[in-house]
Length: 454
Image 1 (tube, rainbow, N blue to C red):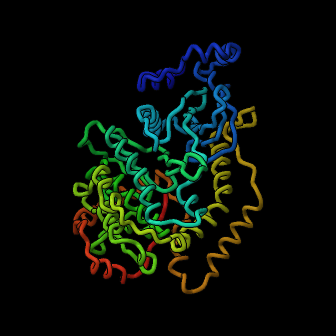
Image 2: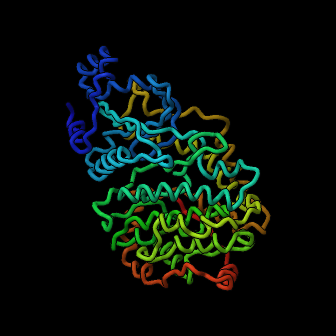
Image 3: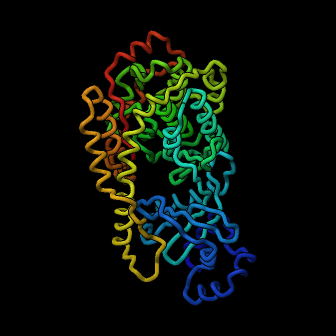
């Protein structure tokens, strides 16, 4: 049996030799033994692979159908060649497997199975087919603060649960919040635990930076350590974006983000006219989640008792028109370029790790639909030639859609930025009982809201 199989089994006590399943594939089991494949690889015959959903530096995510149950699932396929010599990435893989198997919550994507071949790892999880959070909001005819509260309650419920298990997600962002199905009342699930960490105790801290610029908490960018409160900061950023359609931060660099958080009394600004019809309770909720000092930040349980969540006086006015302004340009360009980016990543994986045409079709490209390049050209044209009154808004979208930082580059920038850590933790502490006059003053600040996603 390959070394990797023994390591994963001993590390996480994963049962790969299910007699019932292996006996169902006697021929495949015999062939795998002759070819030197790990015994768990027999499970691959139970899946038919569909379209590619995503791609990264180490592999792809594909939709698949499990034949024994007729269930649609998502399978993360990781290339062992890409992970060889990278002990950090291997440890992250093991930790993701360990964490997923421990979690069971209606608002967290569920773990289904794992197996491996001579050259790949396969992680099988629940497939959420209802779409990303913001995409579904765009398809609505109306969106109110009540709808936003329902969304945040589900996210907080999941965060409260994982924190009770001493797990920190570290990459909470709208792209990782998915609807289970396309029904109107579909629940949400939090996905992608690829950089999640299991803490040894309640007060344990993590010292290695990771996350998505624009949603990552300031303390993650220092060497003082971070823990559960970093997820609360991300919930605050998601809530802000949910209510106005754009991210509160524009910085393209770690240094810029750190300065931006401490430039004013509050780390975020509520700009007119986007926030004119948003309740004071909603703004106070956001400011609580975005307190700079993580030790003063509320827990998920405390935020679930916040007046904005529990009050029956939540604003019911339709905020969708303003939200759509922030979302629509981003979605338009992102959809146009996504297939190109995806296929480029897959080509790079195949070329880098010499995946030939020897029957290996696990890592393959999607067939383009329509003219992607024409779509990109049209989207860029739309961004460039909008009326002058939307210049700040368009600049935000252009900033959002710039190429993402890789994890490796992000870490390098973080190391360079730690010399400025006093700018983060030395700022004025946030107050949860902000007054209307302070918010009015904040509204008069220059509108520079954009985000830079990793």
